[in-house]
Length: 260
Image 1 (cartoon, rainbow, N blue to C red):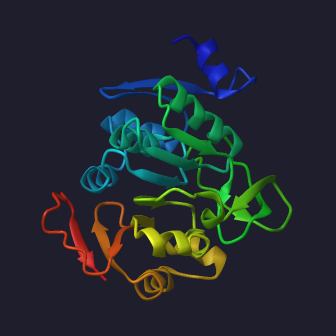
Image 2 (image 1 turned 120 degrees about the vertical axis):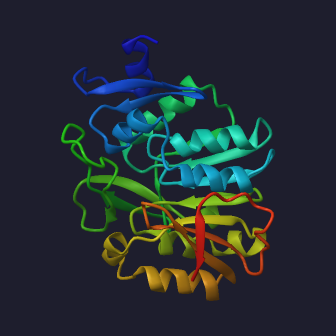
């Protein structure tokens, strides 16, 4: 695929933004050259295999699923393939350029079952601000966060309860500390449909919103009536949350789960 087509799909006019293509066995990815995610995918031909394992065990054909913090769309693509033509993936990414990258990857992989949103997910329907990253510096480019101090770029925050009307089977939340806010904004959806939750709980992000991983896990257990399991991997911040007393014995989960 020509670089011109890729940049057109990304919606990027600036020709110096460093991007690359990586062809994997089941997908083609357009990625930001300096991003940490790109480096991982280059080295391993994969990204967060523990998520892929969980998704494979819990997502089925015709399901409707949500990807909050979609970034480049690696997990969106995985979920899209699992739900099939009659399922839907609702994919949320607040950073403008990253959202364009997400849309590019949706397009070049021919995913007609993905609906993408250029907004954040939280507890209110309001306009917030987000600090744009330096796309040339490297590191985890998507590691930025929303705030209310009117600096950076304006972006909408939405409540999932007011946005999604379909039955939801699975929700991924990796939104740099806004996880509790997002759960508050999706409480009716979760209580009505009891989706599987894959949630990042990282205190360095959660503290920006005056909470922590213990408070977040207790909310999921007490308010939502879920069991919470820490997924034991080299990246120790991801949790599987399932409706209370869900039997996991028939699931082929390749990673140790530690109930908390």
